[in-house]
Length: 94
Image 1: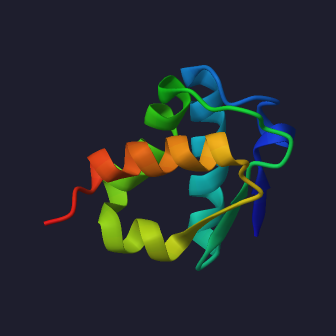
Image 2: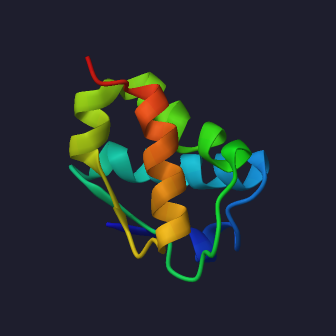
């Protein structure tokens, strides 16, 4: 299932945006093995958004489940770099 951020919150800026996306992802995770999270038309993301959405899922499910259940797509370079940077702090390499 594809979860399109632009259709859920219209942006990826506030923690409220993140919570809205979080609820959509969790709903899909209950019924699907993998969720595709589309950042199409999203030009940037903030830490507030990521903390309320992806980091909440990462903390709840752990690294292995997070990486197997969630696939980020349609992310521009800034968005992808920001997500990678934040994830590197959530799951530091041993």
